[in-house]
Length: 308
Image (cartoon, rainbow, N blue to C red; front, side):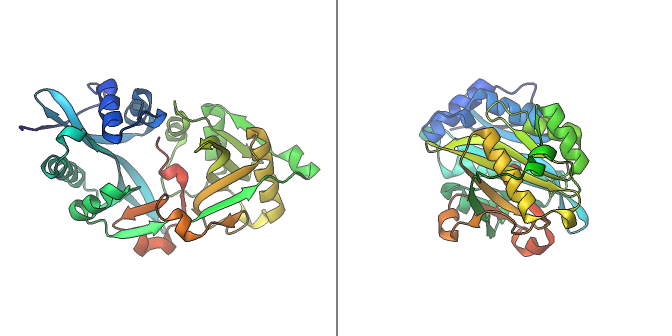
């Protein structure tokens, strides 16, 4: 089979065809594999997305992509790439097709002088990522869960405000945010949360903020705490954190929340850890840098991976 590899720009991208190929490759149809989600991710969700598509006889048979980002390690800014959306049609899935896609994507990333790479892998991509991109470091993201508190202090009810809509949320986040592994300005933040798949809201008192998204995971309704922000952590108490989370759950009509990742500024002020064995297969980072620089990365949260 003759394969043609192509760097497809967003203007020429066929999102319906891509969704069809993805659904066949994964054997399911979900909002995360919809044409709307692909269009959002590649066209408006992020500032720079690179996609290598494979064609045979004019028909798309697979692809792999990368979101190009800036990150902080310690005080230094670096360019990085997050690998996303690798899939190939089941009837043409062989090592040659996948390897050609990977080699082309690797070459394109390297040509942009990007050498830090990470991804949220599945079982099938682990070996490929290790072989072609030398992603030898596996970092399991900590997971915390908690339950909605019935009692909320009156002063917290008065000072915490609810922000909805991408414009209001992004404006408030930029105002209170001081550090983030991925560097966002207000326009970036607007794009990031303007998802066709999920809705977001922000609970903030001007100093402490929680970006949240109501989700249903395997039939269980839960609140996903996607990102946390704090301008002056020295004046934040554990009671305020608990109140903000309780307000978030109340707004979303959820009785429990999940937080994936870490924010060293806020420490261990909320929730309780799930055992590592429960999370290692679902929430892990495969990279060539995160593990060895773990202590220098102040913040890494699910929003950095939750592109779908």
